[in-house]
Amino acid sequence: MDMGPHKVLPLAIISGILFLFTVIYYLQTAFTDPGILQQESPEEDNDMRSPLFKYVVIKGSSIRLKYCETCNFYRPPRTSHCSVCNRCVENFDHHCPWVNNCVGKRNYKYFFSFLTCLNLHILLTISLCIVRCATVEPLWSDVPSLVLAVFCALALAPVLGLLSFHIVLIRLGLTTNEKVTHKFSGTDNPYTDGCVNNFIYMFCRPKPLRYEGYKELCKTKPRLALVNTKGNGYKLQDQDNVSDYSLQIENTDI
Image 1 (tube, one colour):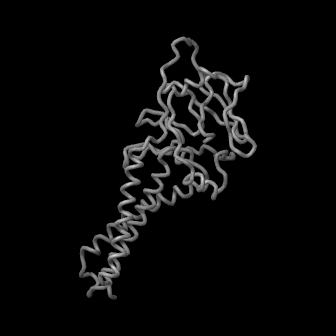
Image 2 (image 1 turned 60 degrees about the horizontal axis):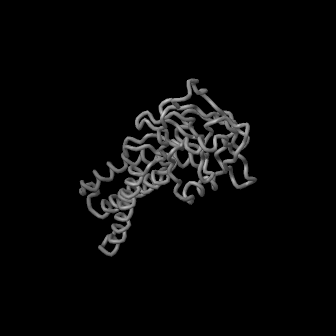
Image 3 (image 1 turned 135 degrees about the vertical axis):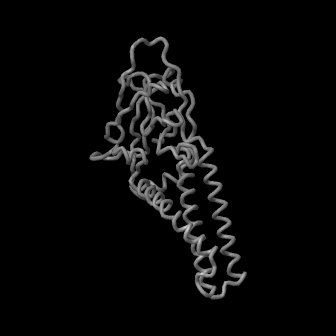
């Protein structure tokens, strides 16, 4: 098989582009705020202990909001407290030690893109090694290419498995945390809009805003609730039957 420079150069360029995007998405995952909610100071004028749970209804499903004693507020839907970062993270997926950051609402797209580019780069590297070995006689004479192909094949198995797992999660409209804790086992998941819409929502939405001063809105407008906007999602609206310190949600993005 003839693998002249005119055939190798395009593959090398593609490999370089994939490597570049892999590094870019890795850095974006590592250094983007995943959706951390700032800790609040405890209520000094409130001698009563806050109830541990409150509930909101989203698409007909009752969602439990747990009071975080570390951050001092009720966690919004899909929010969980990361024991490593010691912060509440919105749409918490997991804490990734490889990027030393949580994966959440604001950087999940980058994390998934990083996994995709990494898998494509590994597959292309294996393919180039195999083609290289096929051009020499005997087949095993090109030891560096054989070693690199075996190493990449071993690395591909867990990385490809992780990518496949997250593809399934997006299809189901779940996070890793919700999946492993069986959050919606036996009940309907109110956060899924179907496979296609889930992927469109994940990759075509604008970058979510950062949350700051979580309780400030509650102090000025303490009675807020999620209401259905008839096909346009949910929004915050004043209601008299909602207790203090309800949740603040921006861009109706839950």
